[in-house]
Length: 234
Image (spheres, rainbow, N blue to C red):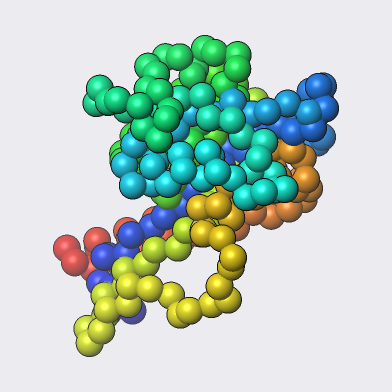
């Protein structure tokens, strides 16, 4: 156990919250269970943060998988702390714009981990859909709080599919999972398609609840492991 705790002290935990607020196919807005769907409209989107992940998000939004739910997203701009020229033909906008603009429904948050909680909360409070790169937040308690906020807004979160590990054992280090079945598109695009399906109401409330329970359980377990690791090292 002590070895495992020391190993896991070096684990980087990733989880994406898609405060899944989802639109889709007809010009009406209705509620299905606790998930609000928007049918028949394009989802105006903004990318927050232009690092590697933000640039990939932007690329996939500009060239979505044909005939998939990802085609429902329409990028309206990007936000960065730096003053930048157009990126991939997309213009920079201020942080306040996507919070107030009626034509922006979705925020893809790709900033540093420590900024996630505040930015998620801002967009949830503004009634926007949110997709966040791993990790959702840095603690289980804040993740639960944000999930509850999402549900109050008649929306519910989910996770992305990127998988990153870094396990340090006494005699080895594991930095990647065993190879699995290769998909025809990247993880980011798979993630985008799934997010789009949720926004269009194509994922059942039961599936969303199951995902929520699994994600929060993993976050709680990871936090407990970290606590045990720190107490072992003390």
